[in-house]
Image (tube, rainbow, N blue to C red; front, side):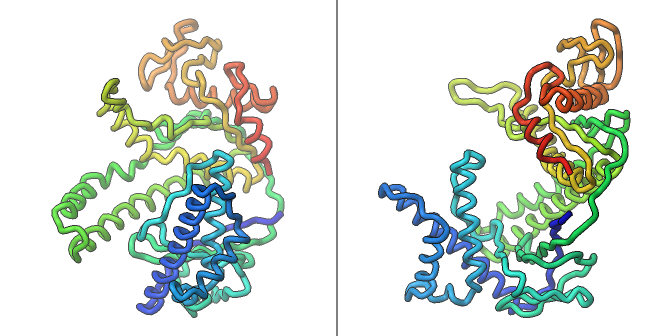
Length: 403
């Protein structure tokens, strides 16, 4: 079977390389915003949506125009990729998978992509990569790049440049091994498994929250746009990057350990975006316990539940296992012994005590057991959850994420 995998490295550019990369990223942002503005103007005038091919023809005209001759300084493939990204964003909007595309701002996700593998040269032994109109660049060769190079993406993050090299290679069909497991995620315990083990949370944002707030106050006291303001901004960006890196490392290690040792993984299909909505309400109908809900939202987002589920999904398929997401309805209120469902079973946040059979256990462990049972039921009954109601997303995911 073929495996696509991206290898990300930090680049070590000189001054000329950094200047050109900022220039290329700015040109891609300009092309994206110009095409988006044209789409809006066409829609307001009653015209039809402009597809990628006719928009690419307009890009050729922009590159030869007297108003924007500097677009020729960047490789044409990078600008074409910006148009493809916009076209994909509109497709996602039309299919109601995402919101309407927005204009890109300078410093927010600056990147550009080389889609043609023939234009990319990779020196794995010496840690160098050659890219069109940039030449040879050195990168921190932390691991071996496996497979045949397909594309390369250069991005800027917290003042540092990175390259992500996409490769393809043939691997043997993986054979899953290990038992099935259900996972219940939480704030006090990051992940509780149905076998009784659990993973403690990292809470990387909470550890750096006071330090981050200190430098944010310093930045607020400086004149916006000044040299000292820019320095403070870079420092804050680096703190955010450090928090994100620590969280990503934690999630990758946790998901790797689980996926290697289990043939089937069942998790709750949690809608994190809905769970973390503000409780402020409106002026006419103000919310209650706003501060407590805000703290809970911050803790949930600090855990990275959505990214954890995404990593479990593709890593389970990579190891040949089965991944299934079940509806979270009543998973924390159902007794695993007698099956009694009641809100009174959850005495406290940590204790589960069945009011019918008097079974007591940790609430997160009970939730993980019920998630595993719901996963088995979804497979056996064609998508029926533990509560007996059909789950809308389980059949699709159960059938799609199978090696």
